[in-house]
Length: 346
Image (cartoon, rainbow, N blue to C red; front, side, top):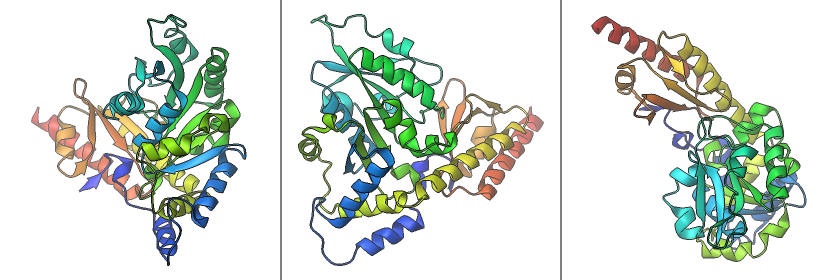
């Protein structure tokens, strides 16, 4: 069954598979003490700043939990949106494993502003209240929207003035950078971000994310936290080889830009169908739309996608590095036929 359900559903990019096969030659020292890991870490420093400290982990949940563990003390909290992945899709891991409270703010576009953060700071210094320490934003967001460098700089400046840190959940950071036409550094280190969960899985890797501390002072003891949180890979060269394939050339950008282009194509095609309404601007690789009554059920016979809001019928359609123009056009054509069928039967 063809899928617009998630960019996680896509396969592994052939260039990444080739890198894995090449790394699978003979023995190498375990637990990251190998040439592949050293090269991957150097490439991450090249993309995020030579002063940064980078660590490879298995998955996005692990990367996020580790970032929050590293940046917070037990009495401190994380300010995020109500829609944030750390709030709704980590199975309670930030609270259970990082031991931090999430202060979730409802926003219409899944983005935080300095004003949103300020509303959560009313009890700073009050020993009876949890103390905010980290502002966590998702780039691009769970609604497919993105932060501009200016918006991130404003958040970082506001946070730092009040003794807070800025974390970016960058599961789709590559999509945001490609859409904005900027480097990874320009929307992280250069605008004042303190720590990043940098995603690879949604951008063509088999598995693997990176935790990047733009300020290495925040990485103190992180190697021990990574082991304690079960995110240290014994055969680390296979995580690292994937990041080398992703970052040594422009694969990270090519894959993300293609997924973004397919989402833009899909949005244009759906808008040509009477009754389709987009609910969010298409700024990365996701399309959020309300389809005409009955159309989603008919189309779901041949395509996989998620209903985002049961109350409104809003669906989420995600494009990936391997989404093709033919698939986009075929899906939109099926939506159009389903709409016509529903109209004929009314």
